[in-house]
Image (cartoon, rainbow, N blue to C red; front, side, top):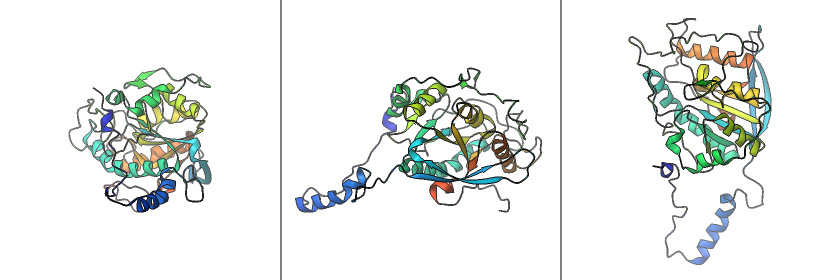
Length: 315
């Protein structure tokens, strides 16, 4: 059974009564038509804006980060949403995803409006979207040969890019217990997810895949060199999935992480013994040192960066 009908529910573009006279209808449509087709009254394109990003990187051994302003053309950029599922086996992780989803959705909407390709990547549940236009868009992209072999190592329902000891240091948090931060008795590990979180819109023009080859096909089909990552969890899937940071960097893409739109699986009872959000910051710093720059959602939305409700650290 296809679930495509859940994705494309639209609303009427017209709210005018049937007895509106022709002159008034023509006048209103004359004002609206340029907006609907993406141009203003003078013919200037409203889409395809440049993204003005404040990229933060770090050098191993330096305590202070380096900031650099960068301009990325929206039409040459994709934004990948990693594993923002509808549920999670860890209850605290599930709560944080529900908190994160509205801010992530607002950022995605702003990026989409500027002309960025949105790729939804809910790993292991893409079958839920079988037959949808977004799924077909990804699977129909022409096969493209990657410059380096894609990872074929399996993990958690997809292929996986494991840590590269020649490139990166050991992760700064101990997630060997799978990182559930619930206090007391830990949650039972299970596959709790069935689809992407409903708070995140999947627009008709978006793509949907959890496959590395399909992701690369989409990027090459559109001449996309820039890839932005957001979603969860940074120390695991955002880094390791076949559409994640490690794979995209290895493919030669310009990669960046939206650092306020992510989270980690980290239990503060494990080393280094900091609170959960400080642990996430440590992994962000790891990414900035070894893999790619980061920026905040403010660079896309113009609004304040997202902060989790329980993160009460002084700022």
